[in-house]
Length: 294
Image (tube, rainbow, N blue to C red; front, side):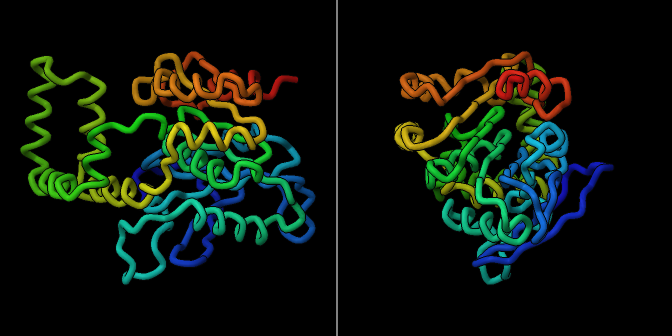
Protein backbone atom coordinates (compact mmCIF):
# COMPACT_ATOMS: atom_id res chain seq x y z
CA UNK A 1 0.00 0.00 0.00
CA UNK A 2 1.26 3.47 -0.83
CA UNK A 3 0.35 6.66 1.01
CA UNK A 4 3.36 8.73 0.06
CA UNK A 5 5.03 8.81 -3.32
CA UNK A 6 8.43 10.01 -4.38
CA UNK A 7 9.78 11.09 -7.77
CA UNK A 8 12.93 9.12 -6.96
CA UNK A 9 11.21 5.73 -6.86
CA UNK A 10 13.79 2.98 -7.23
CA UNK A 11 13.80 -0.39 -8.93
CA UNK A 12 11.90 -2.36 -6.32
CA UNK A 13 12.11 -6.11 -6.09
CA UNK A 14 10.29 -8.80 -4.14
CA UNK A 15 11.26 -11.99 -2.40
CA UNK A 16 8.96 -14.78 -1.20
CA UNK A 17 9.99 -16.65 1.90
CA UNK A 18 7.88 -18.57 4.37
CA UNK A 19 4.53 -16.84 4.86
CA UNK A 20 5.65 -13.51 3.45
CA UNK A 21 6.37 -11.45 0.38
CA UNK A 22 8.80 -8.66 1.15
CA UNK A 23 9.53 -5.73 -1.16
CA UNK A 24 12.95 -4.11 -1.11
CA UNK A 25 15.34 -2.05 -3.21
CA UNK A 26 19.12 -1.85 -3.40
CA UNK A 27 19.77 1.84 -2.78
CA UNK A 28 23.58 1.86 -3.04
CA UNK A 29 26.51 -0.46 -3.58
CA UNK A 30 27.39 -3.15 -6.10
CA UNK A 31 25.32 -6.32 -6.28
CA UNK A 32 25.39 -9.79 -7.74
CA UNK A 33 28.06 -12.48 -7.86
CA UNK A 34 30.75 -9.89 -8.64
CA UNK A 35 29.76 -7.61 -5.77
CA UNK A 36 32.66 -5.95 -3.98
CA UNK A 37 30.57 -4.96 -0.97
CA UNK A 38 32.08 -5.89 2.35
CA UNK A 39 28.81 -5.49 4.24
CA UNK A 40 25.06 -5.47 3.72
CA UNK A 41 23.13 -2.76 5.57
CA UNK A 42 19.37 -3.15 5.90
CA UNK A 43 17.37 0.06 6.31
CA UNK A 44 13.83 0.37 7.66
CA UNK A 45 11.63 3.43 7.03
CA UNK A 46 8.92 5.19 9.04
CA UNK A 47 5.21 4.39 9.17
CA UNK A 48 3.18 5.07 6.00
CA UNK A 49 6.34 6.15 4.17
CA UNK A 50 8.08 4.62 1.12
CA UNK A 51 11.45 2.93 1.34
CA UNK A 52 12.83 5.63 -0.96
CA UNK A 53 12.89 7.89 2.09
CA UNK A 54 16.12 6.04 2.86
CA UNK A 55 17.92 7.22 -0.27
CA UNK A 56 19.60 10.17 1.54
CA UNK A 57 20.76 7.74 4.23
CA UNK A 58 22.19 5.32 1.68
CA UNK A 59 24.03 8.18 -0.01
CA UNK A 60 25.82 8.99 3.25
CA UNK A 61 26.45 5.40 4.34
CA UNK A 62 29.72 3.53 3.96
CA UNK A 63 30.97 3.25 0.38
CA UNK A 64 31.89 -0.40 0.86
CA UNK A 65 28.35 -1.36 1.92
CA UNK A 66 25.38 -2.56 -0.05
CA UNK A 67 22.50 -0.54 1.43
CA UNK A 68 19.11 -2.23 1.02
CA UNK A 69 15.86 -0.46 1.89
CA UNK A 70 13.14 -2.86 3.07
CA UNK A 71 9.41 -2.18 3.04
CA UNK A 72 7.75 -3.09 6.31
CA UNK A 73 4.63 -5.25 6.12
CA UNK A 74 1.61 -3.51 4.57
CA UNK A 75 3.87 -0.94 2.91
CA UNK A 76 4.36 -1.19 -0.83
CA UNK A 77 4.01 -4.87 -1.76
CA UNK A 78 5.20 -6.33 1.55
CA UNK A 79 2.38 -8.57 2.75
CA UNK A 80 1.33 -12.16 3.50
CA UNK A 81 1.88 -14.42 0.49
CA UNK A 82 -1.62 -15.89 0.58
CA UNK A 83 -5.12 -14.60 1.30
CA UNK A 84 -5.51 -17.63 3.57
CA UNK A 85 -3.14 -15.90 6.02
CA UNK A 86 -4.89 -13.30 8.19
CA UNK A 87 -3.89 -9.85 6.98
CA UNK A 88 -2.89 -8.82 10.49
CA UNK A 89 -0.88 -11.99 11.17
CA UNK A 90 2.29 -11.06 13.09
CA UNK A 91 5.76 -11.57 11.71
CA UNK A 92 8.34 -12.76 14.21
CA UNK A 93 11.86 -11.32 14.42
CA UNK A 94 13.26 -14.73 13.44
CA UNK A 95 11.09 -14.85 10.30
CA UNK A 96 12.19 -11.33 9.37
CA UNK A 97 15.81 -12.25 10.00
CA UNK A 98 15.50 -15.21 7.63
CA UNK A 99 13.94 -12.97 4.97
CA UNK A 100 16.76 -10.45 5.26
CA UNK A 101 19.38 -13.16 4.99
CA UNK A 102 17.71 -14.48 1.84
CA UNK A 103 17.83 -10.97 0.35
CA UNK A 104 21.51 -10.58 1.30
CA UNK A 105 22.41 -13.90 -0.30
CA UNK A 106 20.59 -12.90 -3.48
CA UNK A 107 22.03 -9.40 -3.82
CA UNK A 108 25.50 -9.50 -2.24
CA UNK A 109 26.52 -13.12 -1.61
CA UNK A 110 30.18 -12.17 -1.06
CA UNK A 111 29.39 -9.80 1.83
CA UNK A 112 29.55 -11.47 5.22
CA UNK A 113 29.09 -8.47 7.52
CA UNK A 114 25.60 -7.19 8.46
CA UNK A 115 24.50 -3.74 9.68
CA UNK A 116 21.18 -2.07 10.52
CA UNK A 117 19.59 1.34 10.11
CA UNK A 118 16.13 2.12 11.43
CA UNK A 119 13.99 5.24 11.60
CA UNK A 120 10.86 5.61 13.78
CA UNK A 121 8.89 2.34 13.63
CA UNK A 122 11.77 1.01 11.57
CA UNK A 123 13.96 1.61 14.61
CA UNK A 124 11.74 -0.67 16.67
CA UNK A 125 12.03 -3.40 14.05
CA UNK A 126 15.82 -3.01 14.10
CA UNK A 127 15.85 -3.24 17.91
CA UNK A 128 13.91 -6.52 17.70
CA UNK A 129 16.54 -7.91 15.32
CA UNK A 130 19.38 -6.80 17.61
CA UNK A 131 17.61 -8.49 20.51
CA UNK A 132 17.27 -11.70 18.48
CA UNK A 133 20.90 -11.90 17.32
CA UNK A 134 22.98 -9.23 19.09
CA UNK A 135 26.30 -10.56 17.78
CA UNK A 136 25.18 -10.59 14.15
CA UNK A 137 25.05 -6.83 13.56
CA UNK A 138 28.43 -5.08 13.40
CA UNK A 139 26.86 -1.60 13.46
CA UNK A 140 23.37 -0.33 14.27
CA UNK A 141 22.11 3.23 13.81
CA UNK A 142 18.64 4.18 15.05
CA UNK A 143 17.03 7.57 14.48
CA UNK A 144 13.98 8.47 16.59
CA UNK A 145 13.43 4.77 17.33
CA UNK A 146 9.95 3.65 18.30
CA UNK A 147 9.55 0.85 20.82
CA UNK A 148 11.02 2.45 23.94
CA UNK A 149 7.67 3.52 25.34
CA UNK A 150 4.39 1.74 24.65
CA UNK A 151 1.35 3.97 24.86
CA UNK A 152 -1.76 2.60 26.64
CA UNK A 153 -3.76 3.30 23.46
CA UNK A 154 -1.43 1.14 21.35
CA UNK A 155 -1.43 -1.63 23.96
CA UNK A 156 -5.23 -1.60 24.15
CA UNK A 157 -5.73 -1.44 20.39
CA UNK A 158 -3.25 -4.12 19.37
CA UNK A 159 -3.47 -6.65 22.17
CA UNK A 160 -7.09 -6.76 23.40
CA UNK A 161 -10.53 -7.62 22.07
CA UNK A 162 -11.82 -4.33 23.44
CA UNK A 163 -9.14 -2.56 21.40
CA UNK A 164 -10.20 -4.41 18.25
CA UNK A 165 -13.81 -3.39 18.82
CA UNK A 166 -12.79 0.21 19.53
CA UNK A 167 -10.66 0.55 16.38
CA UNK A 168 -13.36 -0.81 14.10
CA UNK A 169 -15.93 1.39 15.86
CA UNK A 170 -13.69 4.34 14.98
CA UNK A 171 -13.46 3.09 11.39
CA UNK A 172 -17.25 2.80 11.06
CA UNK A 173 -17.86 6.21 12.64
CA UNK A 174 -14.79 8.04 11.39
CA UNK A 175 -16.55 11.22 10.25
CA UNK A 176 -18.14 11.73 13.67
CA UNK A 177 -14.88 10.89 15.49
CA UNK A 178 -12.90 13.34 13.37
CA UNK A 179 -15.43 16.14 13.94
CA UNK A 180 -15.38 15.39 17.66
CA UNK A 181 -11.57 15.49 17.92
CA UNK A 182 -11.52 18.73 15.88
CA UNK A 183 -13.87 20.33 18.43
CA UNK A 184 -11.74 19.09 21.33
CA UNK A 185 -8.71 20.63 19.67
CA UNK A 186 -10.53 23.91 18.98
CA UNK A 187 -11.47 24.37 22.65
CA UNK A 188 -8.02 23.39 23.89
CA UNK A 189 -8.81 19.94 25.30
CA UNK A 190 -6.67 18.12 22.71
CA UNK A 191 -3.10 19.21 22.01
CA UNK A 192 -1.93 20.12 18.54
CA UNK A 193 0.33 17.07 18.51
CA UNK A 194 -2.38 14.59 19.52
CA UNK A 195 -4.87 16.15 17.13
CA UNK A 196 -2.41 15.87 14.22
CA UNK A 197 -1.68 12.24 15.22
CA UNK A 198 -5.40 11.44 15.24
CA UNK A 199 -6.03 13.15 11.90
CA UNK A 200 -3.15 11.38 10.20
CA UNK A 201 -4.14 7.90 11.37
CA UNK A 202 -7.89 8.20 10.72
CA UNK A 203 -8.07 10.29 7.55
CA UNK A 204 -9.40 7.48 5.31
CA UNK A 205 -10.60 3.89 5.55
CA UNK A 206 -7.44 2.77 3.74
CA UNK A 207 -5.23 4.51 6.27
CA UNK A 208 -7.21 3.14 9.20
CA UNK A 209 -6.78 -0.39 7.86
CA UNK A 210 -3.09 0.23 7.28
CA UNK A 211 -2.76 1.33 10.89
CA UNK A 212 -4.60 -1.76 12.10
CA UNK A 213 -2.72 -4.25 9.93
CA UNK A 214 0.64 -2.53 10.27
CA UNK A 215 0.47 -2.21 14.05
CA UNK A 216 -0.80 -5.76 14.47
CA UNK A 217 1.62 -7.34 12.00
CA UNK A 218 4.66 -5.97 13.90
CA UNK A 219 3.34 -6.56 17.41
CA UNK A 220 5.92 -9.29 18.14
CA UNK A 221 8.76 -6.88 17.34
CA UNK A 222 8.84 -5.07 20.68
CA UNK A 223 11.55 -6.29 23.11
CA UNK A 224 11.53 -5.05 26.70
CA UNK A 225 14.11 -2.63 28.09
CA UNK A 226 15.76 -5.32 30.20
CA UNK A 227 15.88 -7.73 27.28
CA UNK A 228 17.50 -5.06 25.12
CA UNK A 229 20.02 -4.17 27.78
CA UNK A 230 20.99 -7.83 28.10
CA UNK A 231 21.34 -8.12 24.32
CA UNK A 232 23.47 -4.96 24.23
CA UNK A 233 26.07 -6.77 26.36
CA UNK A 234 26.81 -8.96 23.34
CA UNK A 235 26.32 -6.37 20.60
CA UNK A 236 28.68 -4.12 18.67
CA UNK A 237 28.31 -0.34 18.51
CA UNK A 238 24.77 1.04 18.57
CA UNK A 239 23.87 4.73 18.11
CA UNK A 240 20.43 6.01 19.14
CA UNK A 241 19.67 9.52 17.86
CA UNK A 242 16.81 11.72 19.05
CA UNK A 243 15.58 15.14 17.99
CA UNK A 244 15.43 17.78 20.70
CA UNK A 245 12.12 19.06 19.25
CA UNK A 246 10.58 15.67 18.47
CA UNK A 247 7.04 15.49 19.87
CA UNK A 248 6.30 12.05 18.43
CA UNK A 249 9.27 10.11 19.83
CA UNK A 250 10.97 12.43 22.34
CA UNK A 251 14.40 11.74 23.80
CA UNK A 252 12.72 11.17 27.18
CA UNK A 253 11.46 7.81 25.84
CA UNK A 254 15.04 6.54 26.11
CA UNK A 255 15.66 7.56 29.74
CA UNK A 256 15.19 4.09 31.19
CA UNK A 257 17.22 2.32 28.53
CA UNK A 258 19.96 4.92 28.83
CA UNK A 259 20.09 4.34 32.58
CA UNK A 260 20.26 0.56 32.15
CA UNK A 261 23.00 0.79 29.51
CA UNK A 262 25.10 3.46 31.23
CA UNK A 263 28.03 1.06 31.80
CA UNK A 264 28.13 -0.11 28.20
CA UNK A 265 30.51 2.26 26.35
CA UNK A 266 29.56 0.92 22.89
CA UNK A 267 25.96 2.17 23.29
CA UNK A 268 25.72 5.86 22.38
CA UNK A 269 22.75 8.23 22.83
CA UNK A 270 22.71 11.48 20.84
CA UNK A 271 20.50 14.57 20.79
CA UNK A 272 20.40 16.69 17.64
CA UNK A 273 18.48 19.85 16.69
CA UNK A 274 15.49 18.31 14.91
CA UNK A 275 11.83 17.41 15.08
CA UNK A 276 10.61 13.96 14.09
CA UNK A 277 11.37 14.42 10.38
CA UNK A 278 15.01 13.32 10.45
CA UNK A 279 15.65 11.90 6.99
CA UNK A 280 16.46 15.33 5.53
CA UNK A 281 19.96 16.13 4.22
CA UNK A 282 20.77 18.81 6.80
CA UNK A 283 19.67 16.62 9.72
CA UNK A 284 21.44 13.54 8.37
CA UNK A 285 24.65 15.51 7.81
CA UNK A 286 24.65 16.63 11.44
CA UNK A 287 23.86 13.16 12.77
CA UNK A 288 26.38 11.34 10.58
CA UNK A 289 29.16 13.77 11.45
CA UNK A 290 28.62 12.76 15.07
CA UNK A 291 28.44 9.00 14.64
CA UNK A 292 30.90 8.59 11.74
CA UNK A 293 33.55 11.20 12.59
CA UNK A 294 36.40 11.65 10.14
